[in-house]
Image (cartoon, rainbow, N blue to C red; front, side, top):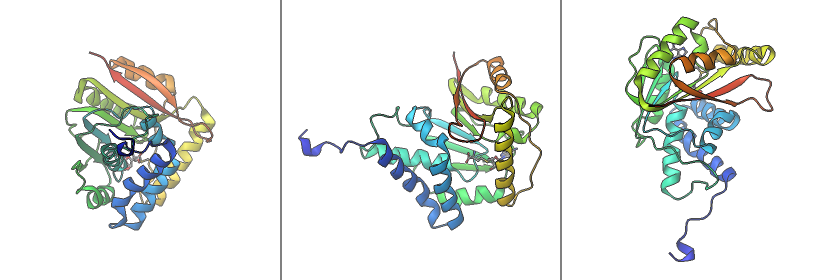
Length: 249
Ligand SMILES: C[S@@+](CC[C@H](N)C(=O)[O-])C[C@H]1O[C@@H](n2cnc3c(N)ncnc32)[C@H](O)[C@@H]1O
């Protein structure tokens, strides 16, 4: 290959800026609100870039529980596009390799927004309006649950986690973001923001159910996951933790 034919080397900051722009763009033509929400959330919430930097979004068949307006789906598509054109930063982990995506979301308005904006993506994401406590989960390799489980009580949380384990392939992975109740101040701050956002989105503000980090880890280990905790709150007043939970055959 001649020097001029090589793809330009890509550094992480411009690559991330491009991913935010590409992933938000599909919402622009359907809802200004959804577009600005997508841009704001991808820019300010460290979880999304962190998942890509650490190469944690691997898995062909992705199930996103409590998917909201489908940010993970559009991000997966943007990653595939960026990788195809040789603009994936060498400093990051392996790019995601999703071939199928199912999002489950309780709120019909979010499902409508997701479908309106994202149904024409090459990934062909599927969005189901359903309650995670009763919905059938499709067979999958990667499950993403970001800031969702605390909306249901502990018994229902355990039921969802058990059905997630049963739906995952033998080497499947669960990415679960939760609040660590052992950090009382940080947990209260995240719950307060969560309530304000839920209210601002026009939803009823429900009671929430947390656990200390050690109890989340125990619950996952009891189901056969090996668990790694990735702190998510550096530089913020919150107590969020990402649990990377892997099944081992
Ligand atoms: C804080 S938002 C997070 C959205 C998305 N995971 C993200 O990170 O952008 C929580 C989402 O979970 C959904 N949710 C709450 N309870 C649910 C349930 N029982 N079944 C399915 N989705 C639920 C809410 O409607 C909301 O869209």
